[in-house]
Length: 114
Image (cartoon, rainbow, N blue to C red; front, side):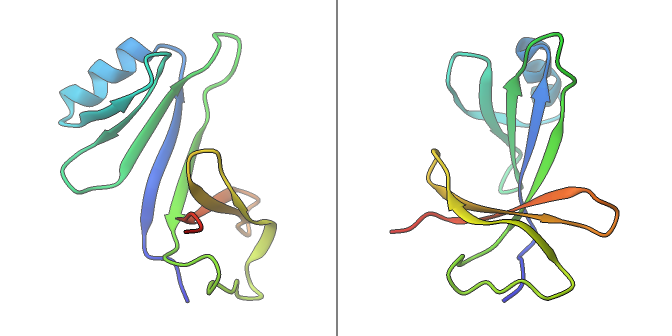
């Protein structure tokens, strides 16, 4: 079983308000917001964009999550270095981390256990 494209982009920002206005000006709609400097945006049926505010002294990071339909059936090819196997997250999904040949970390995201 292979991945099915990009599920979500996780983006850290130093200014939630400015970031929210920026993405809304690009056509993204705010689907949910926790009210504490984080929220989920989407443009139509496209990829989720999860934006979280971080402290000013922290360098904002970005992570891409690839979609996996079933964590139990997914088997990483030997060419893929698994850093962490699938684990349950606090937001209801299961995530695995892999490393590409250049050392970048990628998240693989599957639905949570039912």
